Image (cartoon, rainbow, N blue to C red):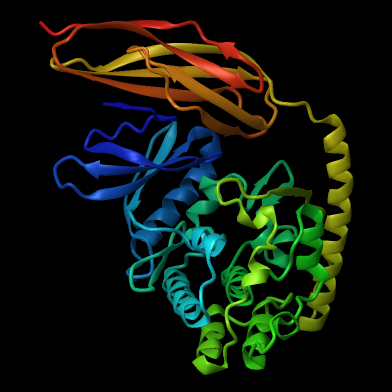
Length: 449
């Protein structure tokens, strides 16, 4: 059996069954315990995402708190393993599809949508009870079960696992725009339950109306979150219940102090008779922008964070200052983007070196771990890689997102050999883009007396 793993896991009690996802944060693999036979989802987060010691400590605290959450709508955390070079999180495997995948391919009727939202709201409440804030509520993090139930995953950990979600670096605030609460742009803001309530309301609006409340990309989308009122669903969907529209808009309030909490939003939606809901809106769903549909590579934006805002004195004053701060941030970001687009150098690969570690050579099996260290110019971009294996076969091409300043980049190949047939060959890393480069092949020899 041959498996290809970037940022090798090193979990001897588990065997890799398949890959569930991959991105700039690392990889999520489906694994099976060798003795118990239990399937688990394994999220492997490389050192680049955990370079800050405080980030590692926060990651540990949040995983420990999440492990205490006992609720059927929360993805269970089984184990956390931290080393100097990576973090490995073992979680409950939820078979099926995500809500993002469901919304991309079909319309979810209102009663079913509300049942899903109810589960998500309960999950948020259970986590909040132990001090956990999700920070990234969106359809891609909701997993659908048989019978119409749902589970919410990536609590808090999403902030560390995906460098594109709520991460502050070098004075820059980074986030996923489609579900970003307006106050998240304020200097020094720490996400809390009202931040989750906003993302939840955006998701509820998307499910019930058939489109996002704010559509666009980058700076335009940030500006809409900050100071553009969402259109009432009754203006978009004929026959949409007025009481449901009012609840959704209350959940999208710019002022977190008066924003409708997720649980109350669901309660108001449940109060609407099933017969009052219009037929599912087919047309609107196809109009969602690419930034909202890209589950594997969400749209990201960076804006400079200015100094502290003036003292706030009441909800109305708070809202006015919030909108003003967002406006300043969006304008400043526009200048930043113009300068960055003119000055940013494209990602280039300068060299690649491969070494091999024979982790297990007990006949009639052997395991070889090939590690490639890829030197780049430190720019952000995407690498396309593949391995030529010792048996002559080539792996599938893999795309690896590289963060700005992430140099070098590490890729690994696990090659397993079984049986008594001798094998002599070499492994070679091939960089296919942004430019072609072949690392020097590394020879291996296997024999079983």
